[in-house]
Image 1: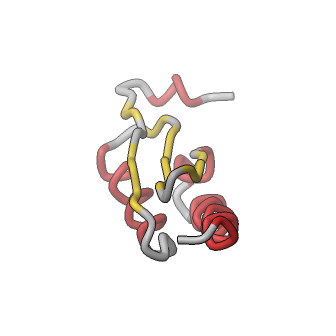
Image 2: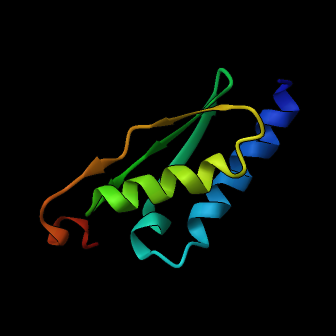
Length: 80
């Protein structure tokens, strides 16, 4: 995959999360490097972790998706 394709895919992946109806997903970050999209941040359930991965996979354009999202047990940990 070319560098320009990677540069186009990362913003689409970030946008997919930023526009999600699931509030926790909007706080996540996506970094692109070495043909990988790495998702990181905190969510309150494994369901949200999986939903974030699926949202990024939908726009990954052949890049490998690496899900490093941490699930926290206390929702208050996500408060700003």
